[in-house]
Length: 119
Image (cartoon, rainbow, N blue to C red; front, top):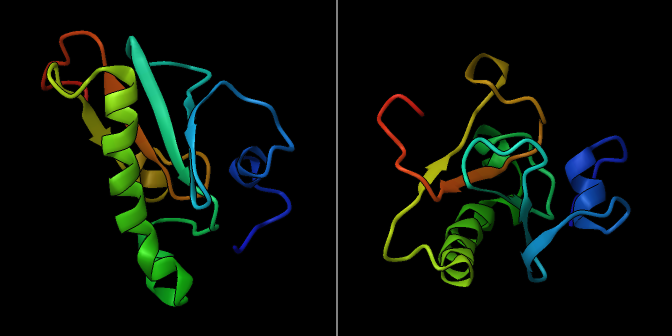
């Protein structure tokens, strides 16, 4: 697992910073966002540090991360009871897209009627 010392998501993934965890395995953590934009707002974060989906292919371990994240989405959706009602996934890539933490992560949003304007 590659980690960066000054990355808040790396610190959450290793337990250095406590959070309200939803699910965790050896590769991924899923926790409630501190500033929720919907009734359910969970962040799915790989323990392996990659800044964005653009940097995943730069090392061998990073190449499997996106598959692990998508498998984790299904597990978290089942835990939260969202498989029937639905949810939205958002991956911001870079500051121009609204990425504020430079560690790859997926936003899972659900729990209210998400219209097309919330992207």
